[in-house]
Length: 337
Ligand code: NDP
Image 1 (cartoon, rainbow, N blue to C red):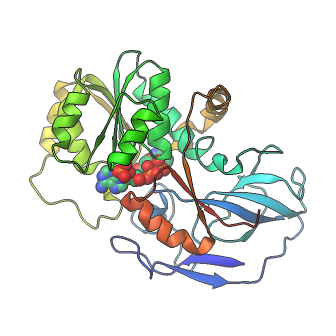
Image 2: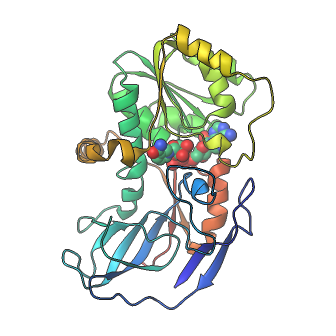
Image 3: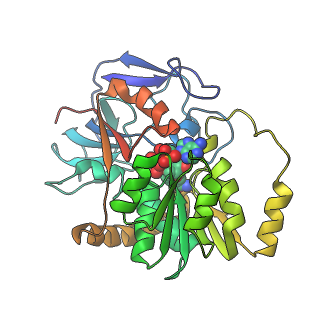
């Protein structure tokens, strides 16, 4: 059983010393347990938080423990009612080949899945995050302007496509011309601006001529600086993630802009609300799943996945994810199928 364990807590960007590959015997499931074999491992920005022992909404991974992660797995042996050998499940095996589970938090996925790994993306946590943050906090009305960064990632791409289905003018922000072209041509966004390009803030202003009513915050940092002056009175800001700062070791330099932000919030009567998907909106998952299943069946939703072969590639692939090297949802293909 190959395992990637947290070797040390990274300072700044994770590196080659952060995770260590170990090989252990395949565990034996006891009565009331089952053995799961990982097929796909999800890579997600939140994993950077689990590497750190700074205060958070969830406990960190202990040094020496297997790195946490959502997985699509197959049941190998089951001593549990409701789970049979061969079942595909959504589980939390972490960064390893095999895991023993008592079934807590494990969901059986249907048989004959066309795309098992999609349970880690558009049909799973990132897709649900997009839907819930947009509909429950952003609450856009037809004709309003919705802006989202990390626009080609699993959350951002879904936010923008749902906003289009709701009749909104959608402006994406992404890193690089290729991602921006994809957001417009394939995802159907009205515009997408490269945050690394010269004149980014001016281009964003031109792309949102009526200002921004909903800013779905995925990244923070310099992108938020460009968005803030464009927000309209009554704007809603679901604060979903701040990936530009996940490797930061201290607050950015520069003048304190808190007063500016608070002044804008007050004068424009804006609402900013942070959320943690399953803590705040877990009860809405069935509603999301029904809506997303119907959109996918009707061909109304595009989903881009980047499958990387081999568990041993996971550390490098994760570091790249935080740098924006991913183009779509990044998953590791671990298993043999
Ligand atoms: P993505 O696949 O979109 O990956 C992160 C992307 O962030 C990168 O590809 C890159 O895209 C962008 N990025 C990285 N650094 C910067 C930077 N300095 N400035 C601007 N953009 C940057 O991730 P997800 O779709 O999985 O997640 C999106 C966000 O949602 C994350 O912040 C994540 O933490 C958050 N999240 C929050 C949840 C919650 O419950 N609150 C649940 C799930 C996700 P590009 O190259 O286009 O710039």
